[in-house]
Length: 48
Length: 280
Image (tube, rainbow over all chains, first blue to last red; front, side, top):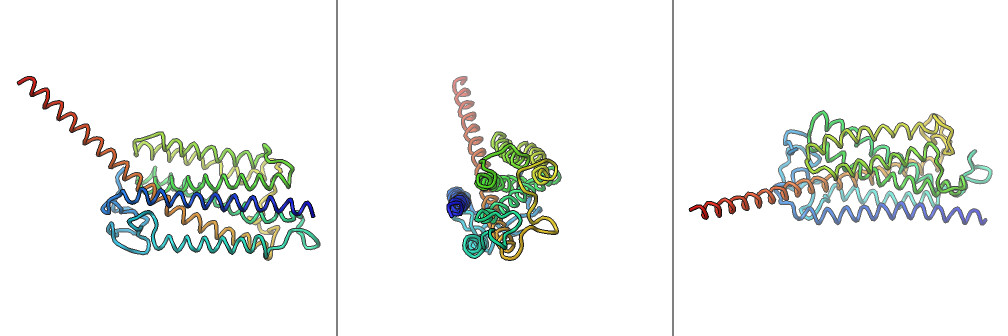
């Protein structure tokens, strides 16, 4: 029982780190995109 | 390296700039309706994956356990394995795009290689962290200088070096060529990582599903496959946005250089006018 509880702590940590890292990376990507995207004139957005 | 309008583009070939469309990014950023659909699918998929991986999928223990008897730790596999495979995919895309840079010499492939390397580094970090959590329970250690772990750490170092090289070179053409060569060299480590468990004695278990008799089946195999789809969708979303971000930054760098050159020309003209005025 103690081993199972201990294993759940590792499982929870793994999922929290994966989801947290990806959410943080996505949020940073969106923020950078908004900041930089507004500065680019419409005529130069060919690959956008 | 200026964009060539006759070559392929991520937003749709020949589409005029600024028009609306499913894949055309909004003026306020790098998102589009298409990327929002993919993002929503990834979010919903992540929630469904959590449901299957943490609730519906059974523990690998008791009479129906696999030969490995992973217990609750089997749940880490549902994120560790997909994340590791996506990191291989990301670096494969970087290597392919790098080869295309050397062949076609277009900006599109250079930006694609850079975007995929960035995403690949994030997924490699996640692979190492989830693997370390797994190892602490399964092997009793956070880290072991074993062939699979060491070659994966080397992969991370190589692609961090690739990204550092990109930042160190300012000339876009020189950067594209040198980064392409570095990307191809770094990718040589991917097959070493994959086959390390077969080539050397390793703590890490052999491939779980990439062989004809997978060691898991039923709901466990379904959950693992669901994880692959979810993280692949996440990778696609990230690639769309990171590519567009690379493109915007490249254009802004060009504009910054143009402004700096104009300023230098204006300074030079003013200096010449002053010198001419003194002589008269």
